[in-house]
Length: 256
Ligand code: PGA
Image 1 (cartoon, rainbow, N blue to C red):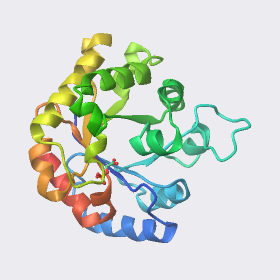
Image 2 (image 1 turned 90 degrees about the vertical axis):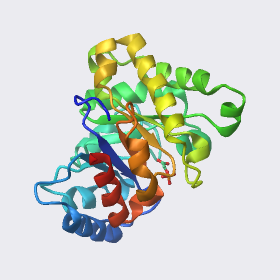
Image 3 (image 1 turned 90 degrees about the horizontal axis):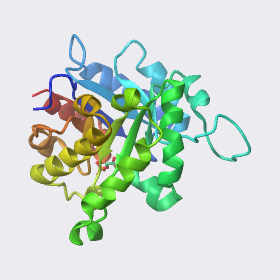
Image 4 (image 1 turned 45 degrees about the vertical axis):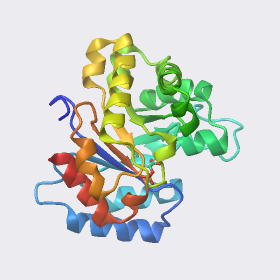
C-alpha cells in the first residue's frame, strides 16, 4: 500500500474522445456512481480542450479534478494551435497531463519543452502530471532505467525542490498503452520505485510525498493487484476510463 501521506489518485485520460454532449452525459452518470461522502481516493479526468468547460460544469461541487491533456509553455505568442496555462486556469481547470507518450511519439513533444512546461504549469497553479516510460525495444535492450532517468531528470530540471512533490509522475510503459498488455505488478513496482529514487536524488523529503501513478492497460480486472504495490500511488487510465462504470470500479480498487 502507498505511504499514508500519498493519497491514491486515479485519473482518466479520454484522449481524442468526448464531444461536449458526451462529456456532459458522462459527468451525469459519474455523479450517480459517486458514493455518498465522495470518492474514497483522489480522482481526475483529462479531457479534450473543447470539453473542459463542460466537464468543469458537469463536476461542479465535486472533488474530481479536471485536467487538460497538453499545454504550451508560453503564456501567449505566435504559436498557432496551442493553448496556454492562463487559458486553462480561466476555465477553472485544475491540472494538465504533460509529455504523454502519444504526444512524444506522434506530435514531437520533447524533454526540452517539458522542462519549461512543468514549471509553467506549477507557476499558473495547475497540477502537472508528467508522463514517462520506455518502449518495448528499450526494455528488451535493458535501457528502461536510462530512459526513465533522462525523462524524469529533464522534466523536473527547472522545478524548485520545494515544488517537486506538487508534480505527479505517471510511469506508462509504451508497450502497455492501449495494447491490453498490462505490466506485471512487479514490473510496475520496480519502475515506479526507480522513478521515486530519481526524485529522492533531488530531495528525499519530496520523494516521500510525490505521487507516482502507473498507466497502461489498467482495467477493473487488473487494477487492484497493481495498485496494491507499495510505490504505486494510483493509475492513469485511458480506454477503461471512457466508461464511467469501469472508471468507478478502478477508483474503488484504488481504495482497497
Ligand atoms: P490505456 O492508456 O489505459 O488505454 O492503455 C493509458 C494512457 O495512455 O494513459
